[in-house]
Image 1 (spheres, helix red, strand yellow):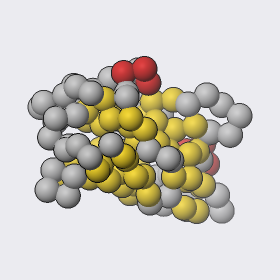
Image 2 (cartoon, helix red, strand yellow; image 1 turned 90 degrees about the horizontal axis):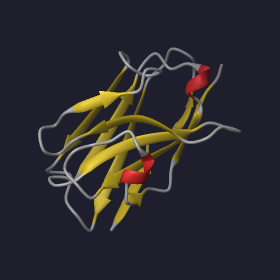
Image 3 (cartoon, rainbow, N blue to C red; image 1 turned 45 degrees about the vertical axis):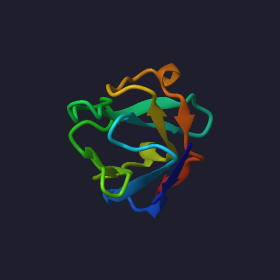
Image 4 (cartoon, one colour; image 1 turned 180 degrees about the horizontal axis):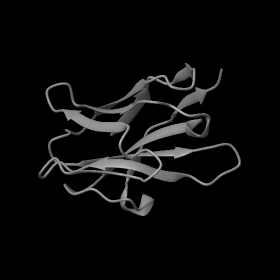
Length: 123
């Protein structure tokens, strides 16, 4: 079971990024996917999740209204799009899979983690 996150990079404030999380060894159909991030010197925090049961999505307040999480079952890939990026969005972003169909904002509910992809928002 593996998750491979990608799509990070250097972006100017106000720009957008789409992060991808490719799953292998299990299918997106049955497991909730969460995105988390860890900024330099800070603890890892929850960003968003999508439930496989009903495709319910939720977002943390810092990204709400400018982010979209989605899953493509055919590609076994989850995505996180963040628009209007701010310097405070700078962090390593991780995707994680919970061994259940409904999502959670609690890191302890996620069994498998990707390696992280760095997003730097700077001019």
